[in-house]
Length: 124
Length: 200
Ligand SMILES: Nc1nc2c(ncn2[C@@H]2O[C@H](COP(=O)(O)OP(=O)(O)OP(=O)(O)O)[C@@H](O)[C@H]2O)c(=O)[nH]1
Ligand SMILES: [Mg+2]
Image (spheres, each protein chain N blue to C red):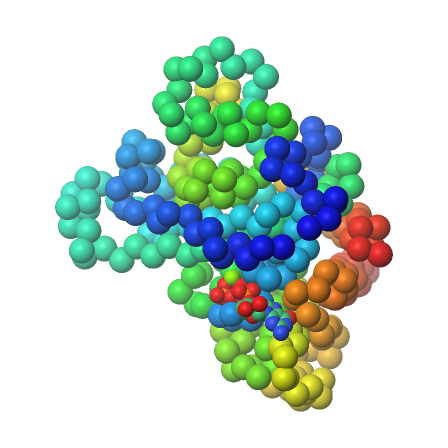
């Protein structure tokens, strides 16, 4: 694996997050966790009306699911900014979200067993 | 990189994915977090930033930027698809106390943490140990063996880090896939046994 440190994201300063989120609190969007999974909604006729940041976010999420953290990584935006964008997009019906663990369907024991089995199958 | 690694285009998760689990890889500066995550991840590790204050909450602040202390902290992470419906994310972040805000986000819903430790720099691990304990994250210790390291007795490590008798200590080379996977497996087994005990 190549050293990931080599590709530092360009620093996102004070001004840019503010502009992108139209001044909304960065703390907004608390319902998104780092590993909440996101995909683009199938019907995207309104996409062209979105501002560029939101449109590229939706386009990034076409073709499957990505976590909030991955979206931030690919877009090189701070997590907080991505959460705000996601709130708006969810409200507008542009994205679908999946909670990290389906509520009350799985115990930790079950998840841990699947993680263990998966790791062993993969790495022997 | 072998065929298991997903190519750039195939980086999306399959529609069937239902569970996104999270394990933290933590440790002091330059202990091998990024290396460890890169060794196991199926995607090129990604890096993202968390902004530490409400960045520019109002326009006036933009003019008075000087007085503001906005810190960004980087975390890197990788991904492992473990079966049709389960994906595991590994998050690495530094252990300094001033990154507490990031820790809140990172620890929410995390199964546990692997604490990387360099036995030559044990003191540097104290801050991160304080954090995992403060947030109540169950953890195992992975002793990263840097070249030229003298092996330390496990009892010595246990004492220095003030570990519970049941806390696993695994040695690992973060550059090696098998060795890193083994450390992760030990952590998961420990988490299982803890969870079982809690249910009793
Ligand atoms: N010999 C040896 N070197 C290692 C090992 N793990 C990491 N290194 C080296 O140690 C250096 C630091 O590793 P990183 O993975 O960047 O450490 P980090 O914890 O991500 O560092 P920061 O993000 O700066 O805190 C790199 O040069 C690695 O190649 C290991 O297990 N053995
Ligand atoms: Mg690093």
